[in-house]
Image 1 (tube, rainbow, N blue to C red):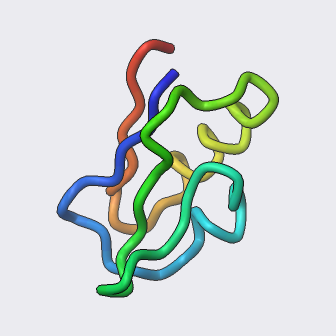
Image 2 (tube, rainbow, N blue to C red; image 1 turned 180 degrees about the vertical axis):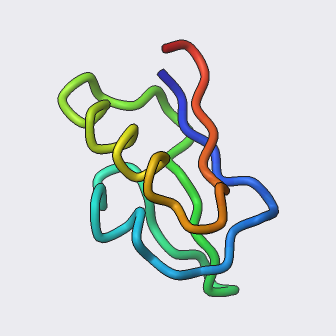
Length: 63
């Protein structure tokens, strides 16, 4: 699975709080995801972040 943060991100940081191993905040205050495949041990947390993102800014592929 890969995770992406699209242009709808509002910089709330919820994804970072839920899954800091995959998501981080960039210099502009918006979230970004690691470029590699999401580790299997964090996939459930990525899905939780995607489900709870208030801006619907997290996208996943391959799962």
